[in-house]
Image (cartoon, rainbow, N blue to C red; front, side, top):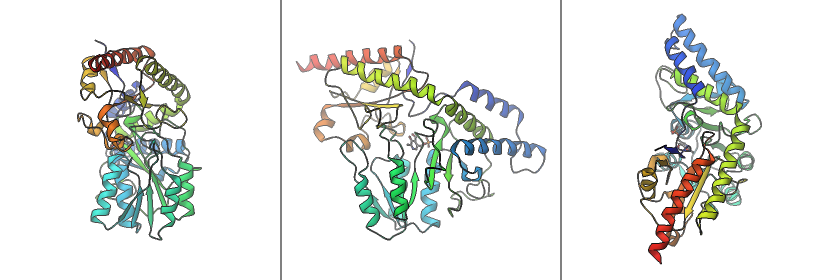
Length: 386
Ligand code: PLP
């Protein structure tokens, strides 16, 4: 049975060119970048070249890229350090954030005396920008706004420029979780003046366990992981040189092939929507995920018009991998918090959410198999109700 992978928002397979570059580095470069001898200098040079390439793509300074072990760590670094070192006493965020932002913000409010303010979201999960403005104006406390650029479950895109302006006008810091968008959109931080952002290589065909925080120069942040003072004092620990090399290579390739891949994936997404509408009467889509303008082109969150807690398992038996929530909570049959917040109790009881997330490697034939299997499952449910 040929397996079909449609869970690319959870993680992606590594690009062959990235593997080649990493293997070459593993075989030939093993010095510690902090060592002053030739071996160390070689490793350091690899890392600094990688940093420079990433900085060029984002139109930032190399020193504004701080390598971390993942997107989660990058987000933690910014949020925790903003509270510890920048005097932030109020965090404005939303209910739809990734757990690494939600949980960290909650912890800051419980243990560091930070006011946690949740911005309203509208019916389909978009941030209520008027409410954000009101909340920004409601207090003089030093505020950090943290809102994700694109939601990993429903794909909704934030009007990031609008939020940045609101933050600037109201003297608030702005952190955006760009884990699902870097490598998928051409982002230029010389134009888009966010203060902080985050990245994770495994979301764009790079290795797992490596990411970075974008920290604008002069921000005043300090490390959360202290020790040898690596990463300009912002993140101690011997650097993951192979990971960094793989991250830069995968980022370069993602940007190089962006237009071609975006076009292919958008066509696939549109095809999936069309086929599901034809074959599954009553199908709907969560959030704005079926609106090509308002959502991440890699994510489609399907709302099947029947309840089937075992659907992930049934698809798995047919060799199809999709997700019912985010990867951290998959395995659980409980509907995720994000999806729940968009539905009435009635909808939760009578529908099944399914996240299908695409990459350049997927094909229409794979979508046909998925839709065929879902059609059979849905017919079984309709017969059972007749
Ligand atoms: N933020 C978002 C929006 C994500 O989708 C993820 C991963 O699913 C993360 C943060 C965490 O990234 P990492 O897996 O690198 O810790």
